[in-house]
Image (cartoon, rainbow, N blue to C red; front, side, top):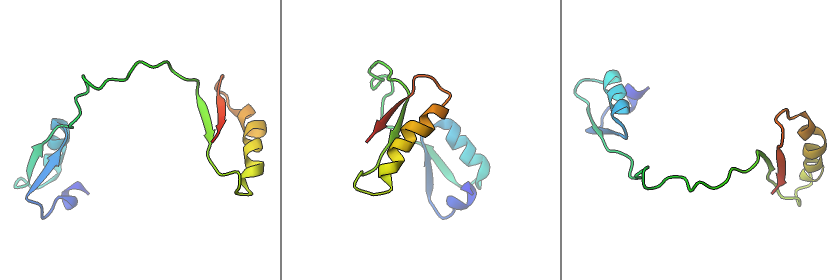
Length: 93
């Protein structure tokens, strides 16, 4: 698929050397492949170290939509007890 996708382009870009090498292996030798790294410095933009939250199962839906009215309690009363992972919480959003 990649060899077909890059046909007709003057240059193909990848975000990592390993990706570029994979593209080169699957395309014609004349295909120019350049590496342009992601624009985010992962050393500067690290996770904030916020505390982990419990595993959460979210139900997202408008309660003005009639099928959601019985679905929300069904999730809590019938589905949640079947979840084998301990300490899972449910949010109705």
